[in-house]
Length: 117
Image 1 (cartoon, rainbow, N blue to C red):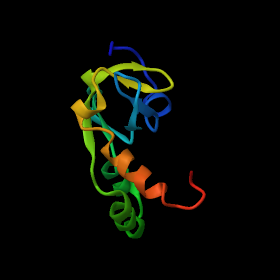
Image 2 (cartoon, one colour; image 1 turned 90 degrees about the vertical axis):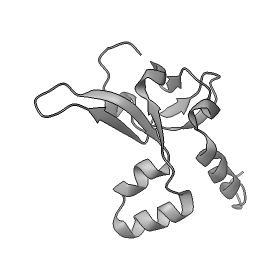
Image 3 (cartoon, rainbow, N blue to C red; image 1 turned 135 degrees about the vertical axis):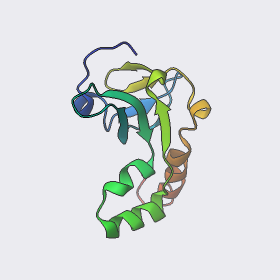
Image 4 (tube, rainbow, N blue to C red; image 1 turned 45 degrees about the vertical axis):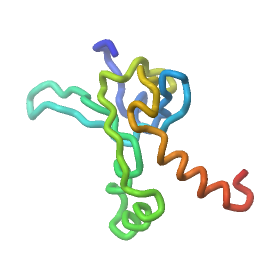
């Protein structure tokens, strides 16, 4: 993606990620940045998966959420980001980047919940 101004909190975090075929493959759960104090910060990767957000929960909930959703986290290099609109579109297919597995697992669990269909 070109170097341009993005409001990372409003335009990237918690937004849906779609692959090159426009198939949903997760949400941006966190960002990896590089740089230091007084220097320029750069986004180096998107972090997608429960492992990226469960650690922010209070300790009692963190363990429960990790048990239910797992601790898997996928690091997607920022260079894979093609566009940022209402969704974050990637240059590659989800399978090539190791994305979408947790969503498929969660869907299998949720389809068994009465009234979730």
